[in-house]
Length: 323
Image 1 (tube, rainbow, N blue to C red):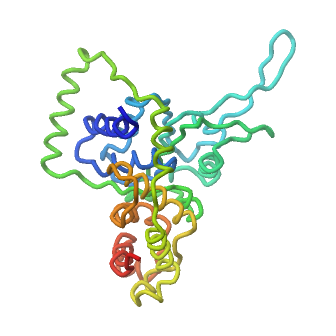
Image 2 (image 1 turned 30 degrees about the vertical axis):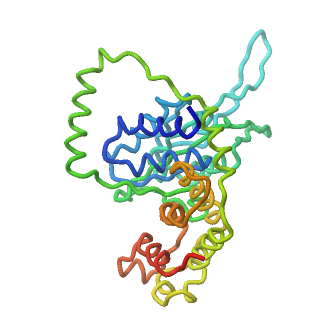
Image 3 (image 1 turned 30 degrees about the horizontal axis):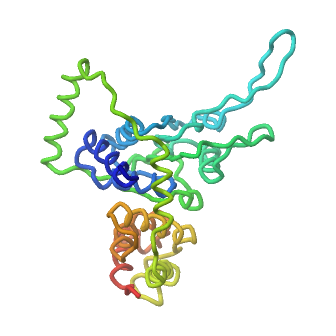
């Protein structure tokens, strides 16, 4: 099988354990293929944790789960130097923290103080941890999926805009439909029934398949017209008064250059998953919400009027013409 078949098979296996959240599964694959990190927002019980666990189960990758709490320390994530004594001689040795895994589930990331969030986000950006003046490189396959609850904000530390910008995509997870809810009940019932008899593990996808897919995605063609379209979408967030008077009222800060890079990466990954070697406007429009959503700073007027980031992006896509 080729790299695309391998990745699609991985998505299919994850889908067997996650019902009614096809969009989240696709974006989890896009994040993996684009070598970026994901911020997933949704109510409790919507299979956010189950999704990353299912990916780890079907991919030859180590999973670490970090439950963020107000008393968490940066060393609890990155690791620290520990003094060991043997034979009358002592020395400090670095003990790796849970960040030294391939897949990281940062559960309820907004429950920890800023210094802890910064330790995680520095590792995400630099792909290394520096302790005691020494740098320790993180694995080549490294994906952070951070979750946060959109409704329970008491006692939380919201991520600043500059740190949100480090995430490639901001994924919003909603309730599954009624038919999916019934399937979820049957799936859990089946898992409970077969828990003891189902001892065989699926063959795991090798990490090399992900790296091979990334090489193919890097070769995807992006025409000048698509490049201009991506730039035009970004510029509409920065200078909304040139596009529409309503946008000018809604937007306070637009998308950063990381948004341009991210939209290009994710659009190419989306085209590759669809079996094409070139990017179309549909690829851009299918991913722009997830790439832009957390990078926009809405005005007070937008918040007061109940205007959401999704509605602002819808308006931008509607008004910006494809080159």
